[in-house]
Length: 133
Image (tube, rainbow, N blue to C red):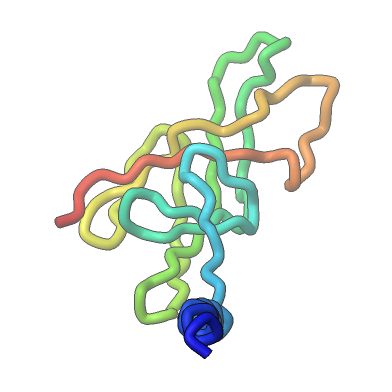
């Protein structure tokens, strides 16, 4: 009888521990703000952001000569802690006020080429956030 009770108690403890895990909702791992695709949510050192559409990509292709360097504008969503999704826009190299700080679109990949048409799924973005508490 004593041997059985020694085995039963650890088994019950393990069963209760595993049942607690089964009832906990699975949290989605967010992407790093240094490599974000369209439609992908990312943690940007404070706010949770999501690029949803490239509004403009007039960058000069790397294999061309241009008078103007061009620009990139991206439609974004800020996933607020309340669950609300607030739209905003960012432009490559510029800071945009957001939450209690500012977000900056640092880079857009891949580089533009004259002989390659970029599709929305090809884009990757890097963001930085400054400010906060």
